Image (tube, rainbow, N blue to C red; front, side, top):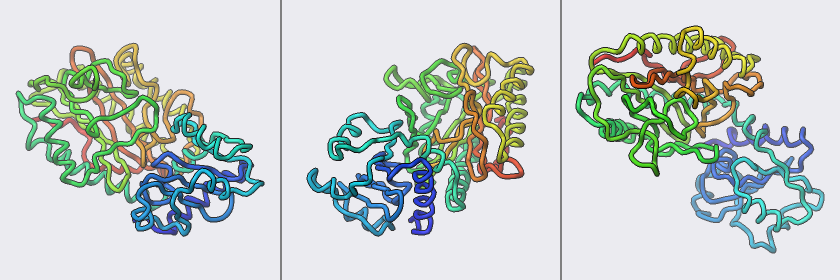
Length: 389
C-alpha cells in the first residue's frame, strides 16, 4: 500500500505545476490518475486544489477506498446540487485531462460547475508522473525481476511444432503465477494490448494497427495482434515481447529465441539492434534531448543497411525507439521524432530497437531503463543475446 509521504509528495509536485500555470486546481477522473494521487483504484473523482488537501469523491466502493487510500478527506460522491459547494467562488480555472477523458465527462462536470474554465493539464500531469520516486523505481525493478524470471523459463517449454498461441498461453500462465496482474494500461486512444504482450515467429514481420515495431497476426480481424495459430518451425526467430504488471507498475522487455540457427541477415540485424540499444542506454542522462537520441538511432539503422526495416514493416514504421513506462505502457518521455524535451533523472524508458525483415521474421531487443547521471540503469537485467535451442 502506498504511504501518505509518497502520495503527498506527488500532490505537492502537481500543485506546484498548477500554481505555475495559474490554475486554481484540477479534477482527475481518469482511473489511473486518481490512483496516482490517492492510492486506490476505485470508481472516484479527485479534486486537487492549488493548495490544501485533496478531496476524493467515491462512487464505488466507498468502504474499500477508505481502507486503501491514505488521503484525509474521502467522501461519497455528492449529488449534483451538493457538488458545487466543494468549490470556492474564486476557484474558476480548473485543470482537466483532455487526452484520456471522454467529452461526455467534460460536459458533465462543466454543467455541474457553470462559469468555470476547464483547461487541459494532460501534458503537465504526464510530465509530473514521468519522474519516478525511489518507491516507484523499486516497484518497476521488482516487476522487471519477476518478468525476467519467466523469460529464463522459456527454454523449458518452447518446442518445434507448437503454435504461437500455445507458447503465449504457457508464458502468460507462468507470468500470472508470478503475480502479473493481467492488466497493461495504455493511455493512447485506440491502442490496446492483449494478454500483456506478443509471442510471434515469422508472423511477427506483419503489418498491424499497434503503435509499435512488432504487431503479430493475432487470432482474428477483431483482435489483429499478438500470437496466431501459426506453428513454430526451426531456424525462424521467435520474438517474445511481454510486459509484467505488479502493484500497478509495468516493466517491458523483449528477447529472441530460435530452435536451430538464424539466417545471417537476421543475425546482422539483431547485432545492430544491440548496438543501437547500447548507444541509447549511454544517452539516458539528464539534459539529453529525446528527439536527438531517436535520430541518431535511425541514422545507425540506415548506416547498418536496415533503415527500411527499422521499427516496423517498410512503409509503416513507428517513429520512436523508446517509450516512457510506469503505471501505463505509453508514458512520457518518448524517444521520438518531435519530442524535444530533455530527459530528467528518475524517468523510466523501455528502449526497443527492432527490425522487421519481410519473409524472414522480426528481431530486436527491449529493456526497461531508468535515467541516471551515468546513463541508463537496466531494470530488466538478464542477458540480451539470442537464445538458441
